[in-house]
Image: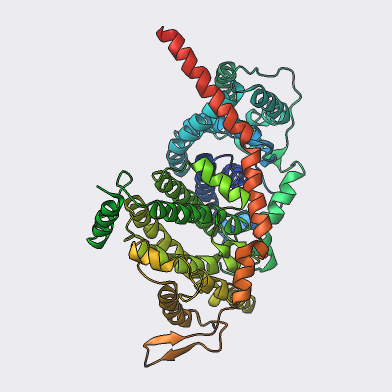
Length: 249
Length: 315
């Protein structure tokens, strides 16, 4: 594999690793604070799945990078300008409606993306994605059910869902704009966007919600230009490793 | 049968090691004691997620983060089976939770101590889960069937947690000088509160005699505490750390470790609500419940809509 191709693959894998890690970190904030015990368990379980996925991607990236890189050096010792996660996943949890919507918008995208990647020419990448698809299928189902329940629940829950859409929608655009390192990964971004839009529209209709139009889209996450939230997330996430460097845990 | 006959039959069942099941006749006090104890245990699992949860975002490696999240999730699961076991005695989960939030129901005082360093997470696994297991292993043989069965499942997961906690301290004990100091400091702070988990001394315990007769408990507070001290006094040697008790000594005659006196003033202060985190723990639980109200209402409203829609379609 040429060096340029290798760098692209590494950056691509890191971008998925970062996205899944940051969403795992956000979802875990609910642990012990969920609206009902069963759902506390569900969101924590999704956090754990995403963390597991991120570890698979970091381990693979570490293997390609070599030089004693490990899953932990990649997660704990890179700065916010090096993180390539989607802006969507670093947004605050907000209320349960906002967390649910963020999960749905992401999981639906992740499902369609990984469905393409399971046939990727890079066998290890394909294998990791195939394994993750089983989990993501459940995440899509769980979050879809909640979007419908809250959208079509009470007047208050609907109001909160409308607010969540307003908060999050502008962060969905960058999912479909390929970063430099994504351009030769064999992903059909047009199909990804069309399929995603169709799925979201159908679900929103069932939930008596509507898809906003003509919203200005934010971007930059994939290139390491983040919202102010990411720096604070990493401050917490990386604290112990940075306070006690070169230690085993 | 007269009440007296019912009581004789009930005690005979217990004496013959036959489990009491939800539909069996039982004295009102037996029912109440079990509701109190099982719900308190469920609340402890749920409140117990908070001090450890405090370190999920800062866990020092991805592996430790995964283990910690899985552990907190197991605890939520334990809370769930325990609430279900208590519900078989006729009190709803909502009522039990209302009692927790009003302060009427208690939970284990240990969770009113703060987690101040990463090593505290390991110390909780090793010492707090270790102490809990002493009690829980006994409870797998408790006389109330649903509680005993819930405990069998919980014990398997708890002993895994304890091993994880110990292993994480073992890594610290072999680490840098700072990590060793962090490990010793956590042990110093968690040791005495762990001993308090077994409750008052037998001579001071108000619920013990009847609970022993009904085989809700099978060992006294002091017996369990002694077993725990004997176990930990050996395990700490592997860590190369010290327990903060200069009276800790092997007693060849008793074949047990002697140990110092618990600070009972502190014990009662924490039980009565004056521990370092009592207010914060309850506040966190109440906040989650209040902020979740609209979610629960929406879920109910949605289910109702679906029901009336499907009954319309059926009509």
